[in-house]
Every structure is written in C-alpha cells, then in structure tokens.
Amino acid sequence: MLTLSGVTKRYPTGDRALTDIELTLPKGQVMALIGPSGAGKSTLIRCVNRLVEPTSGSIRLDDTELTRLSGSGLRKARRSMGMIFQEYALVDRLTVMENVLSGRLGYVGFWRSFLRRYPEDAVAEAFRLLERVGLPHAIDKRADALSGGQRQRVGIARALLQSPKLLLVDEPTASLDPKTSRQIMRLIRELCAERELATIINIHDVALAQQFADRIVGLRAGQIVFDGRPDELTSDILTTIYGEEDWDTSPEPADEPEREPVSYERRDIAGAMATGVAP
Ligand SMILES: Nc1ncnc2c1ncn2[C@@H]1O[C@H](COP(=O)(O)OP(=O)(O)O)[C@@H](O)[C@H]1O
Ligand SMILES: [Mg+2]
Image (tube, rainbow, N blue to C red; front, side, top):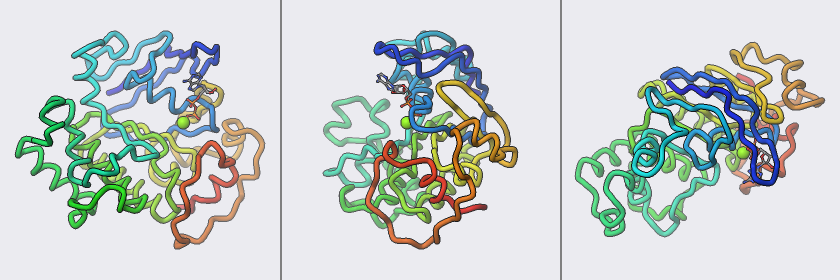
C-alpha cells in the first residue's frame, strides 16, 4: 500500500507543483492520474520514487517512509518501484533482451551489467516477460528497429523484471496511435491484476483512463479536485479539472496508422480527448 500525506512540492523557481496531497493506493489498484499539462502529474510520481524531493509531507510504501531514505536504502526502495515512461527510455543500440535485463541493474551491480553478464534466473525471467508482453520473436532485435508500441512493451518488461510492488507510469501512450494505446493500456492493466501491483498511470487521455483504470484522480494546479470511480467522472467534473471545453468530441476510427510521436505538452486537451474511444 502506498500512502501520501500532506505532500507539497515547491520547485526552487517558486513554482508550487503540488499542494497538500492526500492519497492512499491499495495493492492491486490501477489508478489513473488525469489533469491538464502542468497540473503536477509527473511531479507526483517523481516524488514517490524521489527523482524529485518533496518539500514537505510523508510518502510511505508499506512500512517504509520513502521521504527519509538515502543511499542504499533509497536504491533498495527504488527497486520495488517499476517506472514506465512516455519516451520508453530504451538504449537504442542494445538489443531488446539487453534492454530488459538492464531492469536488473539495481540487483547485479554496475560492472556485471556493464560486462553484460546477468544471472541465469534473470535471463530466464526476461524471456518469460518478453513472451508475456508479446515480443518473443524480437529478443535479438536492436531497440531502434522497433515500433513505438513494441518499444513500450520492452519498457514494460524491463519495469517488471525488478519484481516491483508498485508501478509508476508516466504518459505511456502519448506517442502511440489510438489502437496501440489501448493495447498497451490493456497489457498494463492485465499485468497489474496478475501481479497485484498498485499502479499510478499519468495520462491525459480521459477516455483511456476511464476504460482501463479502477480509480481516477483529477489534479488541477497541484491539488486533487476529483477522486472516484471512472463512471463518476461527469462532464461537470471534467470542466473542474480541465476548465471549459467541449467534451462531446467524437472518437477517431481505431485503425488509423501510427502517427509520428508528438510532444504531449503541445497537444491540446480536446485533441487528447478525441484520441480515446469510448468503452
Ligand atoms: N524541474 C522543474 N523545475 C521547476 N518547475 C518545474 C519543474 N518540473 C515541473 N515544474 C513545474 O511544476 C508544475 C507541474 O509540472 P508537471 O509535474 O510536469 O505537470 P504535468 O506532468 O501534469 O504536466 C508546472 O508548473 C511545471 O512548470
Ligand atoms: Mg507530465
């Protein structure tokens, strides 16, 4: 179980990104964190894995107070948190298998992984995971030869190789076409159920969040303005989260070709809404 209490983050620039966040995430729950660009979604998940230091407040994962950790304690805690990013963060010149095995960096030590010597059980588990995410035929391909959806599958397998308790997922579908986005969200959802992982998915596509999450939390200007079930998210509440917008955009056809990656910051909310297909 993950518990945030009174979490506030103020950046040195003076930007107040999070104000007094209270949140409890039980084991096995998939929570979507929605909100406009700049609402504080990335800051929140980075406070959890301490890529960003919260200014005040407490963050607990089971019995561990994450905000007080440093050095080896922090490294150990980070191993229990899998991260999946929008930009996949793969090493292009390495193979799929090597990218997945790099998820074990924290366990095997720098030199061993630098020399690409991994324990047999890690290799066997990486094989199983690549099969599970639908890439058994791609293990020897270089990462830069993969499509966006395949790259994201590698990112998922890498995150799971650490056997995390918690998954932190930042905009996993922002560079993917609508059909691939749904496949990736479905895969994350199934894996979380299989492994009873608590999961925070930052996502600005409201329809996708509604289709695949157990719970939706809406952030606006660093504060939680909605916390409820997907079916409780009305257009009035969406207006509270995002401001005035026409929410009745019609969905695009599911089979459009994969488009060039776009920066999520440049996409407006209406466009983001339109990429989702209603359940
Ligand atoms: N490294 C940083 N330094 C200063 N301000 C930042 C930094 N990262 C984010 N911010 C600010 O914090 C706020 C929340 O940003 P972010 O967490 O990235 O939101 P989101 O992920 O919802 O788009 C924004 O006002 C943003 O400009
Ligand atoms: Mg973000």
